[in-house]
Length: 459
Image (cartoon, rainbow, N blue to C red; front, side):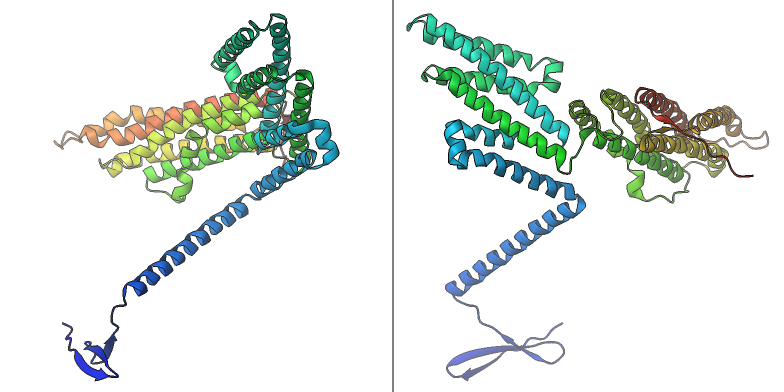
């Protein structure tokens, strides 16, 4: 127990308090400050907390920039595009030629400039086509309305806005339009409504429509030019790399789950959970495939590259990942499997898991190099042989459950179910890997991957 003893003494009309601690030393007690002092301390605490939060935000931003410098480059590209397009607004000769409609070029640059070339092309072309179609129809409707007389003109304009906006909105529910032209339909509704309303009050409608279309075209063209020429990020290439990385993650996950089931794990936990990335990548794959279809030929990807086939490869990998997820769930089973049964099946299970992951890695190499691998079919035959051997081992499993005549004890069935489930899931994983092989080979055929030359060892 700490003994406390206070000493009071008068020094220059001030009371000083001390306490004695366990080691025999004394410590001064500082009297509490007044309301002003407490308020100042609170303000200092708030300022210090704000500085710490700002520092953490800067650190996160720095880490994000270091992790992917392309994000910083994209920001600089957007700033460059906006600066160039803004010159049409700031420069007097250009401003006099385009008028206040020059701001539409700035708005276009802000809206359509995306991280990838495909996304920028998609939004730029959608905006251009939607604006052109809406402007043409608005001019035609305005002419018809002006010929119908002053009394009917408002009703003609109102009816046209109602009908065309309703039809364009309905078209956004059509799957094909929603996937590729949703933004164009939205721009059509906005542009037609604005031009129709302004056209009812502005006499020089054709000049206004021409200026607006010109500024939008300038803004979109500038974004496309900078996106393609300055450190381009291709959606197609990103999709290709995503599928390749997911194959590697799937192989690591399969190795990790099988090894952990049989207490032979040497793979980090992070890599053995990589199948979750495969399960969560569907939306990203569909978005990248959609944008990749807008991109011109680049690198190894020619015109009309089979981007839709990448979605089939990704879907087949997710079907396999679901099995690996179920396999991972068997690891946490509370039922203990007898070592005799585990040893009986461990050899074939480990062999099947190893050859299955080797096939996925070989497919990843095929995707990475865009060359057909001669080893895939040999590994596939080896996997089928391993599946057959595991089937035979499972067929002989009931004989191990029956004890010899001299022993009356029997092995509980619930102790065998977990290991039998693991073996069955491995067989199912092998079947689904065949689907990945089939989808990848179809992609290699459609994309015309180069045949790999098998290396011959020197004599």
